[in-house]
Image (cartoon, rainbow, N blue to C red; front, top):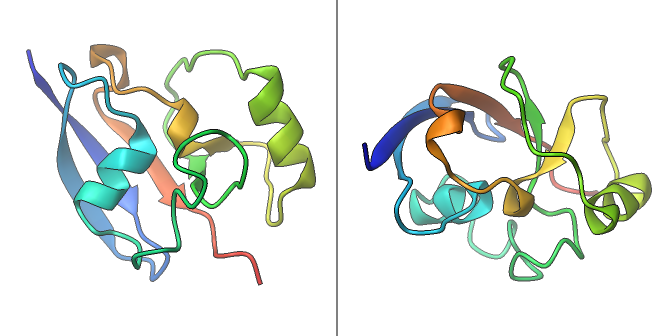
Length: 110
């Protein structure tokens, strides 16, 4: 299996079911960018280094996710609009385990 289905709710509240490749070493932030589900320059500003929280999302499905790195935890501790289910999209790598994942993009920082 090379593609999985992911449901992404954009910042306007619109739901998108997208195909995400498992064989390209992509992360969720890159998938959002490739489908242009957030305006250019508003997501992945730091290039996926867990340094800006622009790709923060709320995980709505019950998937077992990899543990947060210290960098991700530190960034989320300083970010706006953080919830218990917040993760950085750049730290969620697309694997077959994430098939059916549902996330909502966090609002842009004001």
